[in-house]
Structure formats: C-alpha cells, structure tokens
Length: 381
Image (tube, rainbow, N blue to C red):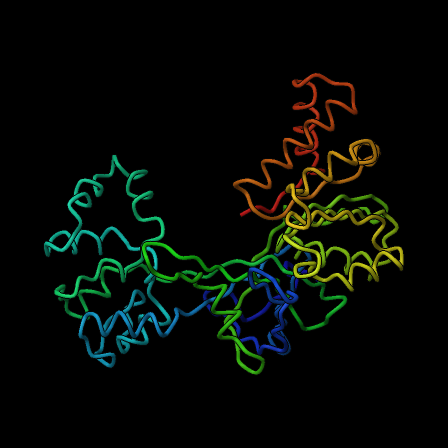
C-alpha cells in the first residue's frame, strides 16, 4: 500500500481529478465553526499513500471575490491574459484558478504605490529591511483592499503582478487498507472578519463549500516519511490531535486495526464543545469498545467555566503518560504549531522531568533523544 513503491501517472505537476464521494459536516447544532469530512475516490488513478502522508489539493478562488475584483477594475472577464505557466487564458479563468488574489505580492503593491493609490505608510513598508512590518500591515488584507475605485490597470499588467496559486496540503485521515481507492480529509473552514470585510480561507472553503458530492477535486499525494506510526506493530503510541489535528490519528487507528497491531493506542483529542465538536465520536467509541483504542482522553475547552486543553489532560495523566513513554511508546502531535504544539511540548518536558526524576536539562536531553530515535514526531502547521 506504499505511495513510495507504487508508480502513478499523477503527481503535483499532473494532478488527478478525484471525484467527491462524500462531503458531510462533523459538527453538531450550536457549533461556532464548520469542520467537514470529505471522501475522494482514487479509483483508476494508481495513486497510493501511507498513513501519515498528506494530500495536495489544487483549490480555486471564490468566484464571487473574483467577480468583485473584475468589476472594481472595470475589466472584461473574457480578455485574454498570459498566466504564470505562459498559457493564454481568459482573465476570469486566470483569477479563479491560477492567481493568488488573497495575499498581495510585492509586485502588485509596488504598482499600487506607483499609480498613487497607496496608503501613505505603504511605500516605506516595501523596503526589504521592513519585511516584518509589511507582514503585520498585510495581515487580514487582500488584493481587493488595495483596489481604489479610481485605480486602473490593464488586465495583462494586473495578472503579471500576482503570484501563482499553490496547492495546499492536508493530513490524510484514512488508511487505504480500510478504504481501498479512497482518501479522506478533515477540513475546518477558515473564516474571519478584518478591516470591515469577511474573509475566507482559499482551500478550506473551496473544499467545504464548492466541492459537493459528484464534483471533482485536483489532487496529488505528498509523501511524509517522518510522520509514520510505529514500524513495530507491538509498540505503543500516544497521539495528541486536537481539532483537525486528529485526522492522521484516525488513519493510524484504521491502519493498526487492519494489520492487527498489538501495541496500545492512546488518543488525546480536544475541541470547543463535546455536543458540537466531537469529531468521529462514534468511530472512536467503537475503537475503544473493540480494544483498538486503549485510552481516549478529551478536552472540551468551552464545556466549563475554565478552559481545558489537551496539554492539561496530559499533565493530569502524567504518571501514566510517563509509564507509556518509559516503556518505549512513540509520542505524536498534530495540529496548530503556534500555540498547541508548544504547550504540548512544554507539558511533555514537565512530565519527563517530574515523573522521571530529572532536572530541566536532563528532561530536555531525554526529549531530544526521543526526537533522534524518532519516538517524538510532529506534524504541525
């Protein structure tokens, strides 16, 4: 079942149009956000993957935003332009499928400054030495925010200032052994409001809103050799996957069940509310009942007055976590890199120090050894 040994005609340069078999909500009533389970067919593609791999998805931009940009610039949507691949295509096609229209490129910003329609502070922010300041300024701003009603540009010149739209990678949430010729994803819609406008994540809302059952999504397999379940099926593993970070661990559990692995499996899952955001609850409860999942600890941050997160559950179970780790268990983390992964790392260091009877330096050295021995693996983003 390895993606490394099974050749396919499809790749990043030549993606496969995968039919959408299912696109369903994972959230219950009252959820404050949208997360969906998406199933794609790989039948006939020759594509194979290992659990732990990612799926590359070529998204398209929100057509409504594209139309607003074209209207703002008073351009003809059918006007021919040359895209980044040196192909001649209609303007609207280029903006929907091939250009980045959310994060403004320096070329575009320089054009805005040149035409005299920039904020007074923008010219100085384009100094390469002020990259950090420019990044802060651009946070929550998109191309549309710089299109003054009097700003005019030829279609070809406009497209030439935009970067090429790149694929997004999503942790695969399925095992081929459990779902032959299928690949599953767990996708949370990115939505927020900034500078008076509602914003949407390009790929997350493409998948969740504009990839209904029966449509097709351009995809390829991205191999991630460093994030694999234990090679030894008898080895225990601890998985920490809040939110959509649970995706690869659903795949790990399916794989371990399919091969009859005897190692114990412990999952820490966190979200906002149990009633609305307990993704794959039925599946995990069945895994518990069957013995595939040995332990399941959950942290629902908004089900009580004080916030509880996965790192708190780890610390609550410090003695048992240390017992598993000292016995050779592999420790996995998937999800948010900025906060969660750092908090979990700190919790792991504290558990090793306190339960293992080490000082801070000793605990850090122990955890570093876990990394080197590939017993501490992270897939964070």
